[in-house]
Image 1 (cartoon, one colour):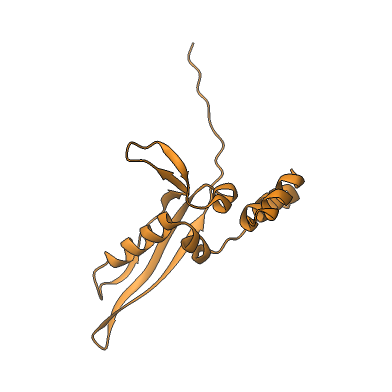
Image 2 (spheres, rainbow, N blue to C red; image 1 turned 135 degrees about the vertical axis):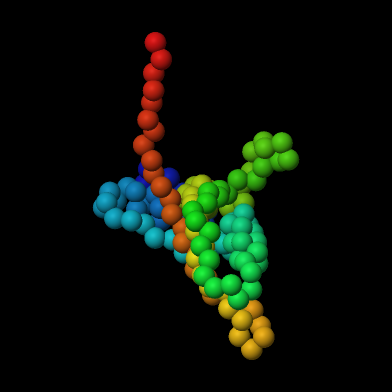
Length: 132
């Protein structure tokens, strides 16, 4: 797996390499990512954030989107997988959750939106049920 991380790095997929190396290090600590960088590299996330913030009522005060899922996939109109927006983030996290919290105010007659984007990758154990 260390060779896979090296191959990721050789391709310029630094986030994928970093995440795999973090996993292989088995430290038990959380890995951190930069949501702003993900927004630059993954249009799905950037579009979701931009649309949500723009949809807030100007000057209405605080807002919180709650957690939402997003991924790096490109899909056709019928939902067929047709590639990825960022191979680096595809192999780093593929799908993940994001949350937007912030405040919308009016200052000097202008709308001012101050917000934060949090990113979270849950790893959930699958539960199985059996039928006899």
